Image (tube, rainbow, N blue to C red):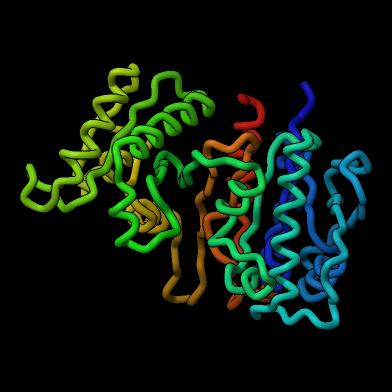
Length: 342
């Protein structure tokens, strides 16, 4: 069996994306599990290597996937020629960088839709920069949904044995509570169940978080559990899904880490993101550096595979040589597993 071809965006050119991409390609084991290549700008990668000599690697500029060599010791780069390196200001928001980052994403989406690649992985983009360039999306997930014509999708975050999917993501907290409806909750439970099976878990155990404190304490703190969440859970059980809930939000995540659940359905963005980043992001107070930034962002429900780093552009770390590639390597690993099992 041929190894899956993985298209990886370089991310915002002014971000840590180019640096961690170069770092990831220096791991020989990466090429033992997949055939990876970067969609970005060779001029940016060359500049980063000049600033951080330890990252030196041979760049193989290609114009189409068929030209890639997929050899350890080199990096195949689908060179988009979108960045004027003399005008690029590293570590700063700019329309030029935002436009490039957006077009890297649409390129990998199109490659996947045309079945030229088996999966896509995205480095971080800057939403402000992208919107300055005239591309008005809340983030990667919405770009993918729009470009692929997908209406029913959700975001999954993963760090080791903690996995979380969301009923809603990039909306206000007020709007998020309004979106907690039986059909959507059931849909996300079903998507989560399918995703876990794709990852090789034959009978996934799913925990559903409540929306309100103590899952409303039998109606004392709200009625969304009784009216929307519990009916969705019962419907999922009728489909044969092993689902539990609503579990109080302050205990469902410790239970998941403890092995009670394979995945948790969170009701809104921060409810799911905070526990993942609490355990995946480690800051060293003594050195004032991030010692570990791990976690994977996966968009479920798409006709193609998309995983992503679970961190931002980290403009404050650009060209320091300290950026961490763990999240990118984890993202590629998840993309590979999903591509093999699809």
